[in-house]
Image (cartoon, rainbow, N blue to C red; front, side, top):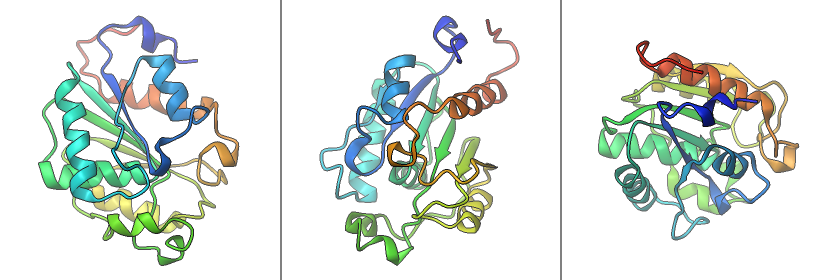
Length: 199
């Protein structure tokens, strides 16, 4: 699915922005990195995020990756993107973002299992400087569905449900995630200038 992505050289480059633990080899983000030739943000400390350190690394990857870019964040990677946008104001070559399973940094029940999330609080609520699509699960243990929708509203993003999909990760059965590729395809079509022809 989504093979057109590989074939069309005019398609923006994906930048994979993982959450805590850097998304393992079977995670859909890692599979997309290999399948689509994406760039990837690798943090020095993937277990203890801070807005400043994680944003600085994302900025490095954005600057080092040529052409138009689409950011693809999951979980705390979504927080990385929204903090980076707040701190940097975005970047002219970042044309959009797919924000999947945003973690609620203000949800204190998460801290017992993942204390590092505390470092990303409070969750930024400023509008993003680029188009974005938030994909949320209706039974995500790390953000209520209502809270994810509130994030999308605050960020000026489109919002879509993934159904009862847990945290949309390997633990919830989302290694291969074909529905995500469909959403990615639709988002890329929406964000690509009309003069670019797709295969």
